Length: 304
Ligand code: 6MZ
Image (cartoon, rainbow, N blue to C red; front, top):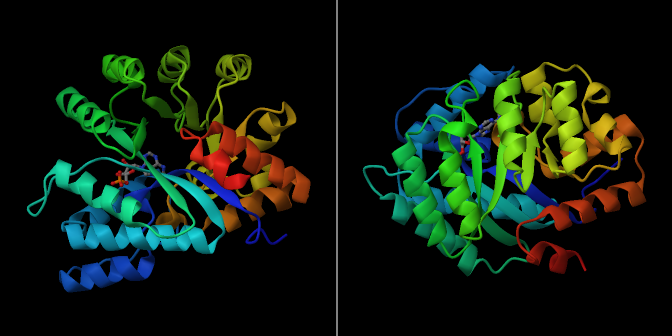
């Protein structure tokens, strides 16, 4: 099955996880840094790679180039709408505000067919003070449609930041949360009780949590290659997609980090299509579901 021509929607992609490998190597070389991405990636290696990426993503020019390349790469895979997510960073060369305005200016001057929106990520390793700061940045950022909760799943729990997310919801922002990336039922129950607008990954749902997700019908972003790497699955046939697809649960197929998993959105669709023998109509239905799960109407408008 070749999914390149299928018009697609991307809802779960991290900016600093989606650099081209060639661009990362160019930046590392310019900075006289030596690093090779490991062949096998689990959760530990993933966070090691992010620290290398962050160490070179210091200037507005690099950020601008990376965001432009991401839009080009997704458009080349026939992706019509993308929600990119990132944690605002301040470096020697830019403030968090400048970091965001650099991204927004790429989105605004984008003359491509692909439409782009931003989600601001609250990182599990950040302080509560930084989480509030991220919320305030999100509330004033013209392209931002929601908040994401991500970062190292071993770090702080969702409840530590729950007031920030309550406030975000009050101000009209949508919320998506990295959920059950590792086994942690208590954290997962707290997340599900908050009823996010979407949940990501859901690798380790206990039976109780699985039922909650089903009953509440919280739309799920799955990232096949990433999930297989985190769980250590040898085959996509064993992924939880099969179970939830069987219940007609709203699911979006996403990439997570194209750099880390050496993938693109067509390959992620192909993995699912081949594992579950899906045909064109099934795939179109998944794309339609994804557009309905998006945080902006532009996703559905793009499809019609
Ligand atoms: C959890 C992840 C992630 O924000 O610098 N991130 N968090 N699980 C994952 N699955 C493997 N993939 C990416 O993009 C990189 C950041 O996104 C989060 C991590 O916090 C990572 O540092 P930005 O653009």
